[in-house]
Length: 251
Image (tube, rainbow, N blue to C red; front, side):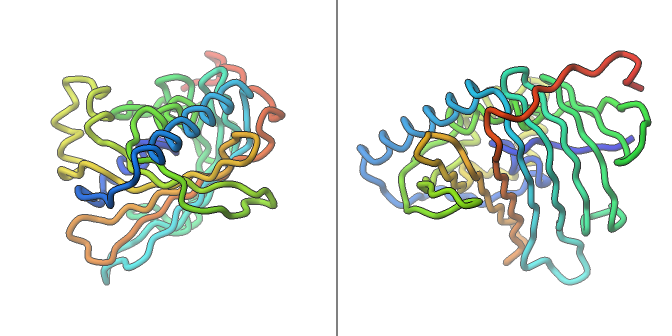
């Protein structure tokens, strides 16, 4: 059975094997800048949800991998349907622990359930083990706003030809933990290695649309071992909505 942990948004640190950077002493930011940043991020998440759908890409990379160990080098693309809390996407792994290079899988998340199958086949979709918090790109996306702190404007950049404003902030693992089922909180603590905060950045265009989400995860005790996930969103509001899987399509 294929198995993929985590989604593409606020639980990315868990998705990347529960690694993180403690970041317990963030640089102080003016209260008004934080208030403005939080308001804009909340507004942008709401805009994405109202628009309903988007095409998105995922890029996983790693640097500073210790000698003799595999890093993570992978890329993916698909559709996320915020309105129906679904996503369908494909990931190709060029390098990953215990995964043959060139492996491609397809994933379908629907609410709290995630299914997977070998890419390019018509095999039945196999239900995956539930994630600790959110299960996929659609249901985890909303927590970018509610589970973050210290969000503030840091600059501008261009993403896929669109000018946007960059906001930096930190994922707050204490907030994420509150949503973890009580029976799995010990697992949550074990996988996060006591990390409390995790840096992330998001790029929002003039229409209050999220164009890029970027997080770097430093492995505790791993020296310079850093994992990075970048998600980009296009065709926001014009991608096709996703129907639920039929019973006959499931294993």
